[in-house]
Amino acid sequence: MTSSSAEYTRAELWSARPAGERMIIGNWKAGCRTASESVDLSRSVTAALSPVPAGVRVVVCPAFTALGAVRTLLGDGILLGAQDLFWEDQGAYTGAITGPMLTDLGCVCALVGHSERRRLFGETDDVVARKLRACWRHGLMPVLCVGESLAQREAGATASVLQAQVRSGLSGCAPGPLAIAYEPIWAIGTGRAATPRDCADGLAVIRACVAEIWPSLSPVPCLYGGSVTTENCAGFWGAGTADGALVGGVSLKAGEFATICRIAADGGRADS
Picture 1 (cartoon, helix red, strand yellow):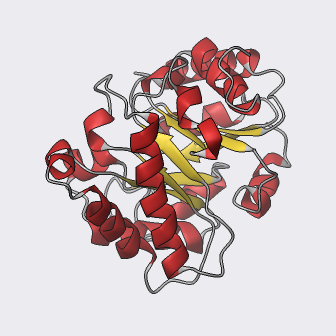
Picture 2: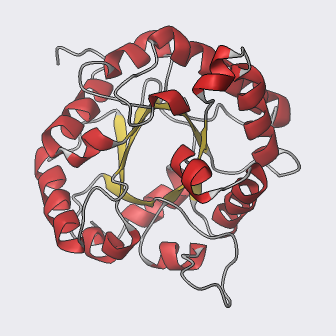
Picture 3: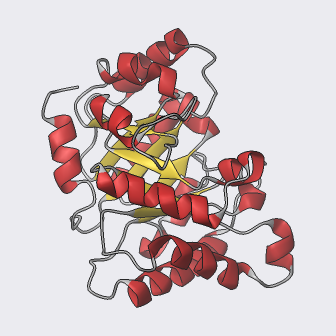
């Protein structure tokens, strides 16, 4: 990674995007068992995306233990993100990963409120809000993850759930760098992706809510996340529905992840 990559990102990652530009974020989760596996994957991703196509901004989020090693291996145009962070800056917080630690390692953004963090680690909307503020204090762009469960969807509560999650995070804050990922919980890691209509409906609710809270802000990048593949990704970008994707399991496959990035750069055409 060139020395200018982090500077470019903190200044411009969230800024007004050229028409049609998309953001693709690879969330590696704990899919790599060791730092050396993350290193191998970063080399493969760099080779598969050399060069990164115009019209797409690419971010990868390795496990914390691999951030330092991966940072030195990513090619130009591939940016480094974190999967999570703690809401305080320093102190007696055993095991915590803080904003200053992440910026020191070259991270430019951090996932906040991912459904797995909410479900497995008990993160509440209040915790998510505190993490958003930690990102903004340290120049990280938070990627706020929101989404409804299957039970909430079947009860017709999708809109109210999304609105509550967005409002909890943004209300009372001055506008800052932000992307939002709509990840319906019932589609995370299940192989069951939302339809393009599901995606469009969810993103419409999110965009309207952001515009209500921050009316003066330029449109916030809104991504889709939830079993994104090379076969279905183009559908989420039809007619400008989503501004990109938060890619989970497929981001561990360098060739397929690169294909998603190229489809995104090519205006969503799967035959590129």
